[in-house]
Length: 212
Image (cartoon, rainbow, N blue to C red):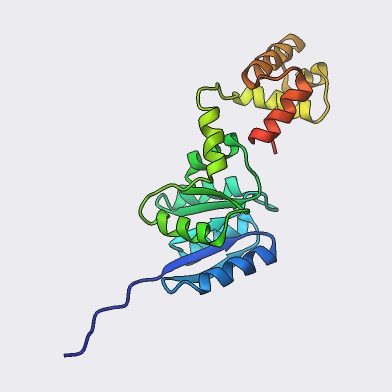
């Protein structure tokens, strides 16, 4: 009697990155894995959302910093439409706040582009079993700041304008709050970040991923 059992279904992968060389490298790595196949590519977040909708991949590899729609927005949109989507962030941008934002929005794993191809392949397979994979150096940052208070949306709005070089009065005018309110929020920001001054606060916020 002939064997009529179906072959195991392959892991269908969508790659989203605005750098062609990165996509080519990942494509080559996936082609070497007998249980995986590349089903599509996208060059920005907007295209990733549309391609995910069309292709329904098993796993999507997604960069964060991209034109038109960034990776975080794409994660949110994809997971809203497809709550079970497996999305692995593969980016050059570290920072515990950015990692936690991506995971909160529904990313399965978060890797840096310095990861080896073996580590990326491992994360793809791990996502199918519900396991989260986070780059070790990022996991350390998350643990280091686990007890710290997060910045509120209002504090972030002040910090973004401060990062643009705007003074307290201008920030207050743009946010429709008093200058004293801006100063109060800035004091809170510096206390939460352990910053010496506003310039230091902006630097820390960028390092941790609160600001791009």
